[in-house]
Amino acid sequence: DTGVTQSPTHLIKTRGQQVTLRCSPISGHKSVSWYQQVLGQGPQFIFQYYEKEERGRGNFPDRFSARQFPNYSSELNVNALLLGDSALYLCASISNRGNTGELFFGEGSRLTVL
Amino acid sequence: AQSVTQLGSHVSVSEGALVLLRCNYSSSVPPYLFWYVQYPNQGLQLLLKYTSAATLVKGINGFEAEFKKSETSFHLTKPSAHMSDAAEYFCAVRENTNAGKSTFGDGTTLTVKP
Image 1 (tube, rainbow over the protein chains, first blue to last red):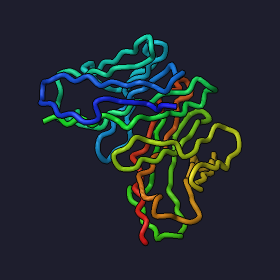
Image 2 (cartoon, rainbow over the protein chains, first blue to last red):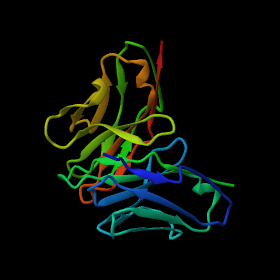
Image 3 (spheres, rainbow over the protein chains, first blue to last red):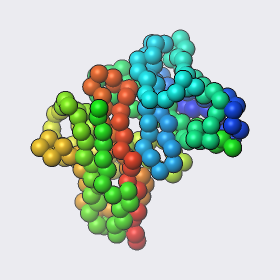
Image 4 (spheres, chains in turn purple, blue):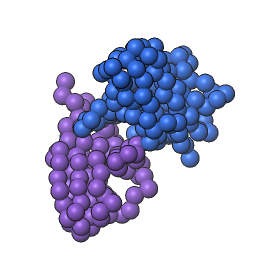
């Protein structure tokens, strides 16, 4: 079984630019969540999508947006990048079985904003 | 709102010694609780989860945690530390109404000395 895959793994942007991060969930999983992990902190919830619909949104500005495609892959977009957006962005795929909410994480996309 | 507090951002033990990582949570309803481990430059991996069944939960790699409702705690333990246990550990509580949203603590870095 292929796990959660994210791309790119590393990227460097400058302030004001835009970035798109991509995620493919585990085969058969229909829901993904995005988290931001700033150095020295735990992951912070950004979005959850299920069956292409937004199911939850964390306390992030409108510069952050996401979408989910028919094949359940997802993109996270961040516009007008700020230095503070530098972080590890984690995508998590959620099992359809039961309702425990176990998150299967990818290895993340490390964004550096200069 | 749910929250998680991990006491001690850094814990150092000798190889073979007991590992104890502390986690306290706040939740207005019976929670789902998780411990995740993160190795350098990787995503998070589930160690164990509490889902209102047995209060003592056993996970991978010899770790276990005990849910104590009266103390709102979910501390992680391992009887004998191994060098390979060195990593960052995160406690998380899941929002009951949204399987994809978990609130994480700020993590505890475990160092294992030879």
